[in-house]
Length: 379
Ligand SMILES: Nc1ncnc2c1ncn2[C@@H]1O[C@H](COP(=O)(O)OP(=O)(O)OP(=O)(O)O)[C@@H](O)[C@H]1O
Ligand SMILES: CC(=O)N[C@H]1[C@@H]2OC[C@@H](O2)[C@@H](O)[C@@H]1O[C@H](C)C(=O)O
Picture 1 (cartoon, rainbow, N blue to C red):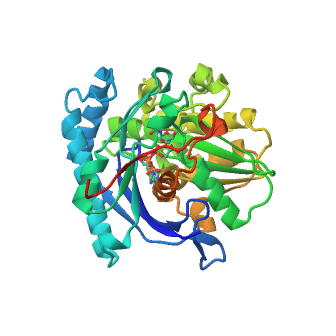
Picture 2 (cartoon, rainbow, N blue to C red):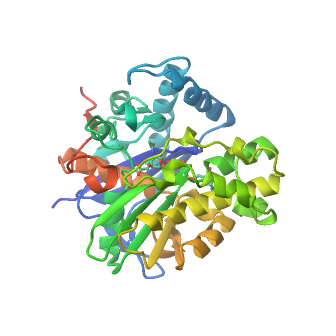
Picture 3 (cartoon, rainbow, N blue to C red):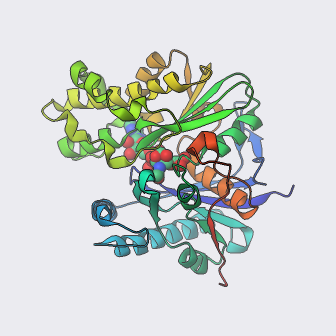
């Protein structure tokens, strides 16, 4: 099949910025190259457009104002302003990326545009990602696929996670054998479990970095615990941790997905900065370990991606709780930081071709289905 050149754009729940990645894919197989250390990695450059404090403040207000959303078209409070900003920030990110890599719009077949999640209520069949795909397509002169969660959620699925079909393509390209776990630790964490016979299940495991980030911002003014160094100096509050893990979410059978706002860093309340960071970091790690309760086959290899892979204390705890050695995505030639953006490039091509992007075992939707809305520049 012919390979297409696709750009994926992700602005995740951490609200840190726009990730940009170009890959070549036919929607089934991803073009890979052998990296310097012998692993197979997706071919293509990546880019990033960080949010300023002011940008992040607007997005935070948008998250809060979005509580008033009743129908998915609603844009209460600052949501319309935030949506225009998200579209413009993504356009700038792509323009800078193209020029940095000597590319022009005609070199790109399609863009997969995730947008910024502001509402995720699968029980109400609603998940809203702000960002205007049609406007982005017109500005860039490139076809854009957006709104990739809606069809699934409207059909009764969780609308998340969407990356598993890309994880599976990467695992196939790498030729991994045996049961494999792929963990993405963004604001929220999600796991893809691939059994030795190729069967896939996927679900959100619980909070990722979001609570740690919120805690650090409140206590230190810096929005992350660099390397997990603060957590490493503290002691987790065991009774609080045990209580947090009694939340019904952890007992629900997958597929399941989580909204960023279902848990709050305020739960660590009165603890010292270090002990609070240690407790919230341990919470993320133990919530991930609860994934093993739902695994049809215990993975013998775990690959960890997302910003959380750079939190040394979190990785140390995961090594302990997952009972097997874990490897960071970067160590095997995959990109910890850009895997999700690459996934949305792959998903856009699958959407263009009408291939399924969600499955009963990944979102709980009744049957495998495609999704996404295509906008063409001339429309
Ligand atoms: N050096 C570091 N030390 C500790 N944590 C880090 C480091 N670098 C990044 N992070 C964490 O990673 C987060 C960003 O992760 P990532 O970009 O994967 O999230 P996202 O894509 O926004 O989220 P999601 O996957 O939920 O959509 C930061 O907010 C921070 O918590
Ligand atoms: C609703 C939403 O935006 N969910 C995100 C979030 O961030 C991580 C986790 O929660 C995952 O379910 C999803 O993103 C990834 C990209 C996904 O859909 O696979």
